Image (cartoon, rainbow, N blue to C red; front, side):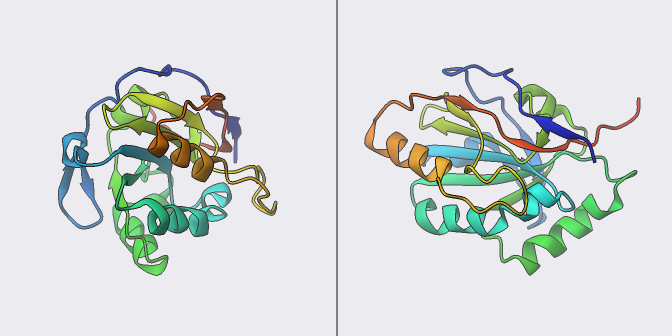
Length: 184
């Protein structure tokens, strides 16, 4: 396991790169499918990373709290050839077992992770209704899988977004496993 901290590629105010990806519901999902929301939260994640596993409850909490206002999308960009636990079939299994109600999409070519500048799992990007980046980084302050969160960073930032308040710390790096890149 290679531990990485998220890096800045997209800057605050940059537009969300478009995508069209297959979801665990066997349907194609595009960025424009989420036009009727006040914001979009995209989390680069996978099935096997202990850092992602430790956030599953929080991801489901985010959906329960904000799904009527914020689109929540998980994207798995890991190479499933070398990491079969991150295969599409295992994504379906994980989504079912963990009762994901948010869309969980496969970035098979890894092109989308590269466009966003995602390098670790989880790596979260929060966009406003115009699809402009307002926050990139951690979900909460529990930075190791066994840590207990004392600050709900993403919940606070979504609440600020919804009331039109500026998010002062617009980049607060996430820490997690490296995205497993395909060999060229």
